[in-house]
Image 1 (cartoon, rainbow, N blue to C red):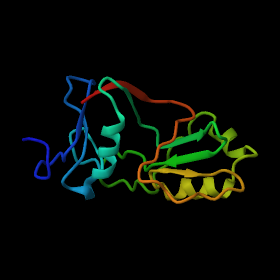
Image 2 (cartoon, one colour; image 1 turned 180 degrees about the horizontal axis):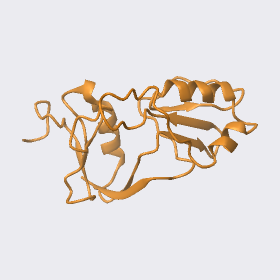
Image 3 (cartoon, rainbow, N blue to C red; image 1 turned 45 degrees about the horizontal axis):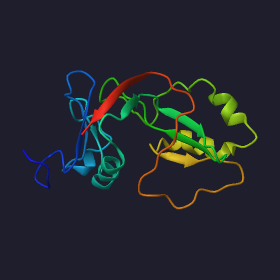
Length: 165
């Protein structure tokens, strides 16, 4: 089926080189399914997000799929971020909002650092919102952009793949 509003994959899809190319990063005609484990391993994104990603990514760009519920970053300008997702459950009965997760190496030092507002870190760990939040001391987050990203402070459990359009 060609890309478009009637295609369940939406207008944009990127084929990953992992496996035999059967895994995609794509849009969806079911926006409520974004972030849920409802497909055969593909990554679903909201229409504006996949459009922005598609426009910013060239064929052959390396892609790392990171399955770490907690990520953190100190950006070159000194701003500190934490991104906390609900961990992947083994079955539907597990409550991913209260499931324990393993903190990445170096996170305790990051959280205890003088440039971090600990209350913001604790709030992010509790909320598990799934997007990067500013946790810099003395700094409140600005209005969020349509597309956000943060570099991972420490890379654990990852798979390196390449994206092709």
